[in-house]
Amino acid sequence: MLSAIILVCDRSAPEPASLEAVVRSLSALVPATIEGLVRNVTLASAGESEDLRKIADHAGCEIAMAADASGVIAAGLGGARGDLLLILRAGYAPQAGFIEEVADCFQRATRPEALLFRTVPEGLLTRLAPGLSPVQGLVARRGGLDRASPDLASLVRRAGSAPTARTRLRRVD
Image (tube, rainbow, N blue to C red; front, top):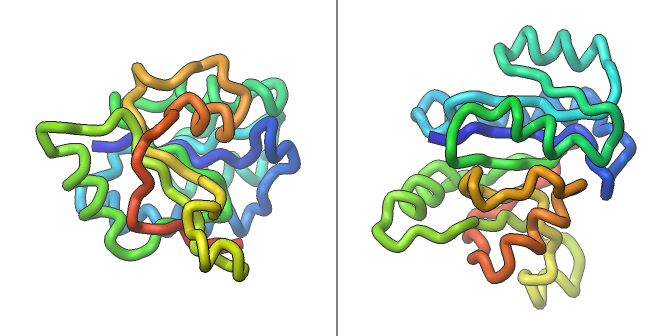
């Protein structure tokens, strides 16, 4: 089972996502929670936000606040309960097939260290070369993640040659 961390902001995107984007990303994880794939969710952000606390309270998830944007990843990792983590930038949601793909991938005998989630190709270049779509989420084992990573891009670089999921992330903000 996954512990999900939704990044409201981090060093590479220091401006917090809109509250609507956070809610939409959260709601996209409901089917995965019902299926038993997602165990708990943590909203990770920088600074205090009463509105974000209200969303977390209503959704039944935890909130992890860092002093600044460079500490958001560490705060989120501290709030996660499981060993297998889904880290997702607020404003993105997995497409249909996400539940099955993640479950299949991490139940195999040869499990990858991480699985990267790219966005749906939007422009001509990314339609021609889908591998150029930005990574806005990943699934990885807690032990393979560095608490000192200041942003999602650092975690993706650390994942190295991790496979890309067939399931894409769609923008929901």
